[in-house]
Length: 578
Image 1: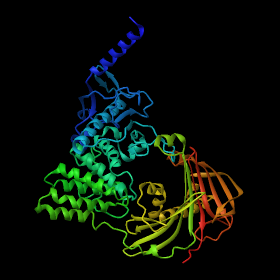
Image 2 (image 1 turned 120 degrees about the vertical axis):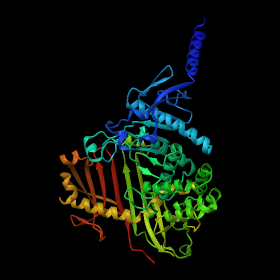
Image 3 (image 1 turned 90 degrees about the vertical axis):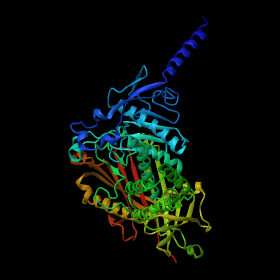
Image 4 (image 1 turned 60 degrees about the vertical axis):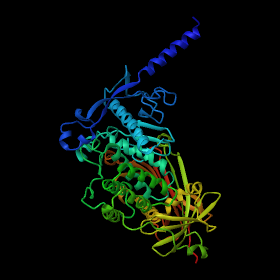
């Protein structure tokens, strides 16, 4: 027989034998409802699951087993692949005669994430007719070092839209953690956490280009809500938290007994807990729950057309739709619930008088910020090794309805791009962006290009306060006092004459380089290793800034032992002209 033909027949036979296994059997964590309560977890070791919650199921054979994209990943479908760690190492699972062997915690977690994601995407397809536009790379027991602390990140899971990845991190197994906080399981054991994180991927398809931070809270609430639907359970985290709910959408109050009501500038997960509760409680009053679920998705799609959407924009969209799925006798109760949890109406930029007034004035406050992270961390997180930005706060105009117009500029070495931002003072939401030509900026690409600048608008006061706090802290360090001296010892300090651009002109400065050694106790309790602090000083009259060697501190550079550096310099300061 021809050798080439023989090899072809052998290959064909192998392919046929692979596809003959139409189904596989695997172990996974099931019985999510039964995971609640301390009694279920009695005597169960850390990072383990009760045997009563582990079952075996038969599922369709992975559609793309051993494909070229991730050749070492058996648990792969057309829309996602589930790998052990970084998709470069050998998988933790073995497949023999259609049976996935789960011989240890790693293989159980990888099989469990695959099992629930396979169900999850089928659920999205059936309920919402959702087809992913991107392939999702999923990593279990992923090893990532926090560049600030230099330690492995644990007890978490996250979706990264930058590189379309979903990561499940290891659980803490330290004695210190167990003594203070109790036992915890790895996130990849928990079907609700898996569904929650995958729902961020879903949300990213619905609303990829938001401006306001409140949409992060809506994203968290949406992710919880879809997980609730998928598992028909209003609680998240029962397996990861070993019988206790991380968040509970069935309760009107939070863990501290406080009513889950909206407040400006809530942390994203706190706002999300309120949004998911509001949706779950409303769903209970509808006569067509599945239609209500589709309304939630449609509302997010609709509001995504407004890049300045807020939590109240979502309320506006939902209030248009809810009456069609509830009976008249429940309307008042539902409306009251929404008004209690999310009071008030969506705000708009109504006072545009600043556009017709003169906007002359020198930049009164400008910063240059740069950051470098280790290449490994940048590769793992899908971010750039080096990032820098320059921005200036130029002019501020008080408007009606507790709104402020702020003229800000994004700057680099070659161009300055000024924009007017209208901000709601109470919530910190951006209500509109206008070019110097007085026209509203609506182009998605342009808004994306100034997103970093936009993030500084609502956090202006925090940025300035943080800068002043750090300059004072590092000034104290240079003088051998302050909080940092409890964790670090100055091993060397050197003053080097230098220059930088200030208000567009070369300006003489001193660069005070402070080399540090971390004290033993600081190392034991995990305080980040700082190798060096550089303090920039200049002969200037800026009252809020501290002195070092009779000169004002106008900037600093922080160098960590793992190569991470952060630099922030005040490079513009002047009186505002009216």
